[in-house]
Length: 49
Image (cartoon, rainbow, N blue to C red; front, side, top):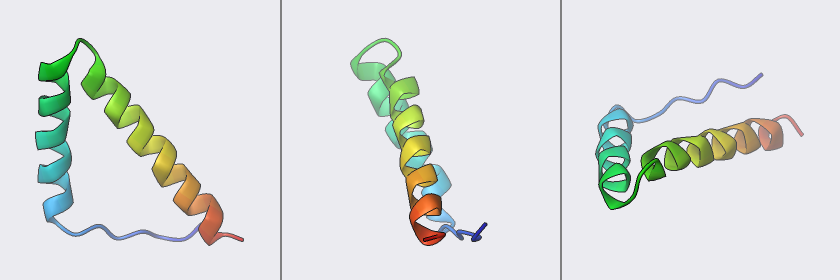
């Protein structure tokens, strides 16, 4: 499995976006994190091909 390295600012950015989405609608921040996880998994899968 390839190792993906994220820029250090990514963690802060994800937290900010999560909070923003949570303030827009109930559980929208959780949906954002789920989609982010799905995208991450897709990147890993594509990197292995």
